[in-house]
Image 1 (tube, rainbow, N blue to C red):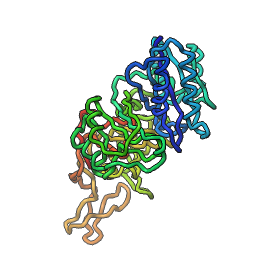
Image 2: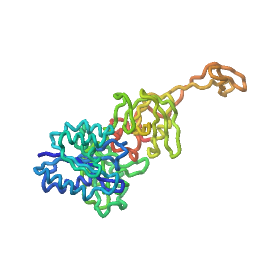
Image 3: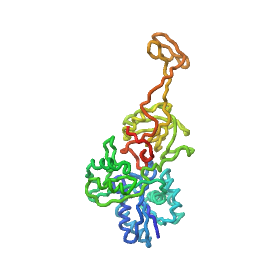
Image 4: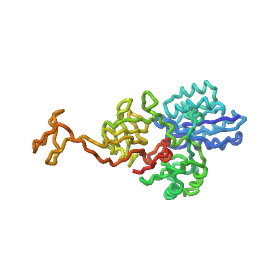
Length: 415
């Protein structure tokens, strides 16, 4: 029988990685089953507050004649390697027959775009009598089901390279320049490896997980070539995953919904109604009016030079924003400038060269020195140091699911 195994919520902020545990399970299962094709790494709703770290779930397809032994082996791996002592770690595993996948696609789509509960997952499991493993609260059952049922109309590939266990939690040893070489030689077939503008190697994580580095690409050939260029400490194993990274699969089109809610991600069109302003910490905010009302938009400090684009917006500009809604504020992932204000109304200029002052609301303008009077403002054309089109956050600030402009066929602008 062909069975999909879905696993989630085995890591913690202190270490481990669900992809690594899935790989260990695949290796042990080879004595009773055959692994078919590449495993899948499915990133779920990035705004969920319950996530441990990257909110990624893993699934893989098996050909097996002994489901009980399969379940026992996976359980053994979870008990041995999952971060079960962490309060936020609540693993879940499902075993889904191949022909049942279409019945899970709607649930998977909701899990990536919306907010679902453990009760929602258990309802699906009980309805279709899906064998499962539940550890502690079992919240991982949500992602486990989603990783199996997700329909990938767009996908990329992720090559993950893993350290030897004795290296976990220690400083990673790697040659920074080799990762810039990868980007120089293989971009855009391999992308988001480095951030040139901010001199950051994006491919090497900073968490104490088993991953030495991860490379994102469009083909296995390009990823293997990139791997041959990378110069690092010796590693134990590696695996390529099919993934929804860099697909915008989490984004909901605001034009197709009746309301927007916190903990979801949207594409929304609006008009700037409050000029950008900075707050302590280097964060930049502005406000847009949409069909849903007025909302704040934020370019937080980690988005670096992207904030310079945001700072150039003006009241009256028409924009399309992409990002996650949290605390009634849209955390920007990218922005499209649709219309830019080219003329502004200013207090009229007196013949002496100075601008007049308002006498009062709807009472006109007067020059204090010359006593010159005018009823109307002066319409002045302005030059905007910005162009129409898309702008995105730099790779070092990019979320797993965010689709880079290079994959959208849009002009790639570094600002």
